[in-house]
Image (cartoon, rainbow, N blue to C red; front, side):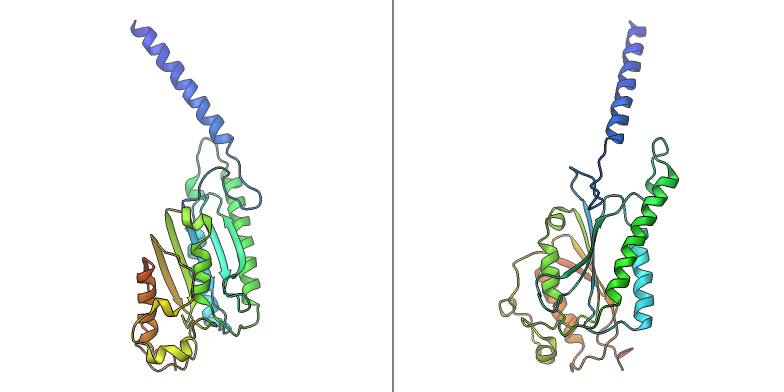
Amino acid sequence: MRSKIVVFGFFFLVISLVAFVINYKSTSIDEETGCVEDVDVSDVTVIIFDQSDRFESADIERSKSILESIISSSKGNEKLLFVEPNENLHYEPLVHFDMCSPKNISEINVLFDSPDDVERKFSEFRKNFYEKVEVALSRDVANYSPIFETIGYVAMKSDYINAKNRKIYIFSDMMQNSLNFNFYKKIPKYRGLDIKSIPMHDFKLYSTDIYTVHVSRRPNWEDRNNVKIFWNDLFGEKRATVHWDYDFSSDRDMK
């Protein structure tokens, strides 16, 4: 009786292993998006480049360093969306890159994956992304900076809505400037956020971490801290968590 149980257990183990191998090998990747087909994207990372003013060399160097950290830490099937506010169509940003990351070397399955193949695919992914970054950096400056319209576009994409983990990196001086809301006119007298006064999509940013990457500019508002207060109010109303890398109440690198 015991030997039959052992034999049955052995065959069950073999069948399970074969099923696992077949399922692992049958994973299909969408050639256009790089995402695993028929599998929801659970992680979405969004990068917003606000180039209403041209990035200085120091801004470019720092931005690329941060981008490399983002790329290097991306996981297999993590959606990476790289957009730029559109001065002509404020609610339709320029989409430079919208693809899922292949698995990185730390995610290799030693039984089935070739390290060389994994490294090659990830290297191609990184190369394609940086080509789009260079295209974005070569563009002329824009007359408008519709930052929250761009965020609204991102927040209503299906991949973003269905994701469990969401991150948005905003490379900007955070000076919103659009037909809907112009900081240069409003911020000096800012006394609290009135959502009704801002024509925008009705969206939320649940489970979203927003990281601001400050790009130094020469804005002309009087109380810089009002910029931070405004965005804290807005992101709070949208249920997002914001992480600032610049103290707007300080005058450093703004002179």
